Image (cartoon, rainbow, N blue to C red):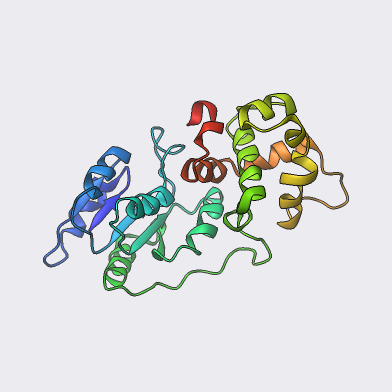
Length: 238
């Protein structure tokens, strides 16, 4: 099994209790790449959903793990471990839609729950997902699709990463026309925010509201841009 987490070595010793098991730990992106590129496939990959480390929290996460397994042709059942923070929700929304993810386990459930979940996923069985907190909310993963969706994602990424502060700098950072940047509120991100029910209909949709929304969803937006070929909009976070 592969444990992909900054704290992987902490949980490694108890996992050696499994019969006839080899545990490989990757605590950063480079170690993870070395563990999968050109190596044998793992029976199960356990990865932190959000890598709670100053070096990785904005540059690598559990969704990157899934994409890297695909890139290196080393797909394996994936078990994602969560911290229980609200900022994980957008990542969870996507994880529920990814066929590679066979389960999610909360770290707060303890070591025994983790070991039981690993055993289940290693045998190819899917763990039940807890229902989404709000079934009416369309995942951003499903909204950032197609040409229009990718443009919206680029605009959101430039804002979320702090690479823009107005429509002029937004056009420059996102590499779009001034006309497109001027429509960020009316045509691109505003409709997405309203569709997800994250704006009070009694108030006008303003540029400030759009920028605030991008900040609230910054971790996922940055992750989405990084994983979909739009890292060029992220400024210093790339």
